[in-house]
Length: 185
Image (cartoon, rainbow, N blue to C red; front, side, top):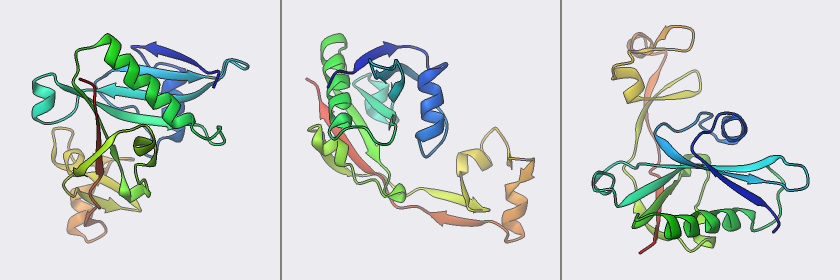
């Protein structure tokens, strides 16, 4: 593969647009200091992006692990492009950091099975806890969004808690995510 890979600290522009367009969550992940762009050398177009940052839990507190928070490729790229890109990211962290592990999750609710992580020699280590969300008008809202400091208002000022009481929204448990890790050292 003859791609160019650019490592940056900001996702303003190309990588950010790509993640917003192609990642199912539709937004950049907060707290990510490492951004990788996969660039087609013939066109200069960014065809893939990854955000790597702090992960939740005890590993994050001790600085021993980072999480691949967003990973996207545009449709129609050649076979094995994802494992090539992931492999580069793994090698970059092996060479340029003291991090012991890279962690990532495959979201079963989006029919992700972790195929790209398996192909890049990540190990399957189990499942996350099931997540409870509030579903309103076919969109899921995490409980942190509803009950956290940001309040209960979402798009167009709708008060989700009020919709819940009126039974126009409902609590739903999502499938757990599949957890993968790559031990760097």
